[in-house]
Image (cartoon, rainbow, N blue to C red; front, side):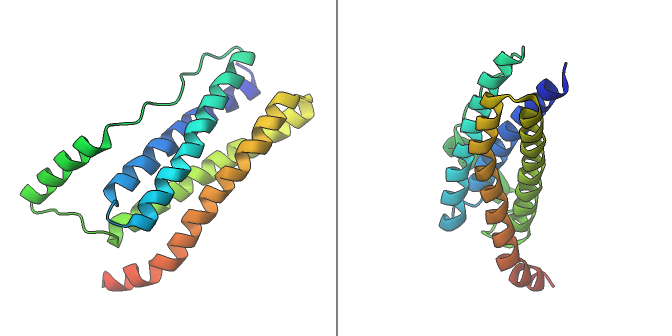
Length: 165
């Protein structure tokens, strides 16, 4: 496996994981409509990145699976909520769970951004126009995912961390 194909595989897996993490966090915080809708929207970017990376992988001898199917969040969320309530662990909107989710999402997006940058540099060195176009169109969206989570962390951390005292 070449360095480019290994990076394509790692980035494909990272984008698929980020999509699923965004959708799971959106589901956990569906009462926070601002977060919920943004997370679902930016998860679509990772979904599209995963699809495009799978296509690019074929050109490099890789058989990457396509994007993971979207889980049936409604039924699973309802079951999870009932189980949590029965156990006395009702998840409240925001709080430590939201901060934990935002931190994880930010780190996942940062990891993907690093892979996009590495892939762009390799594509430039190899004069691979298709990979260069892929990185040029997808990486800015990953950077926006990072900026959004960073902004939310800055806005919410003071009040949520001080409320936890």
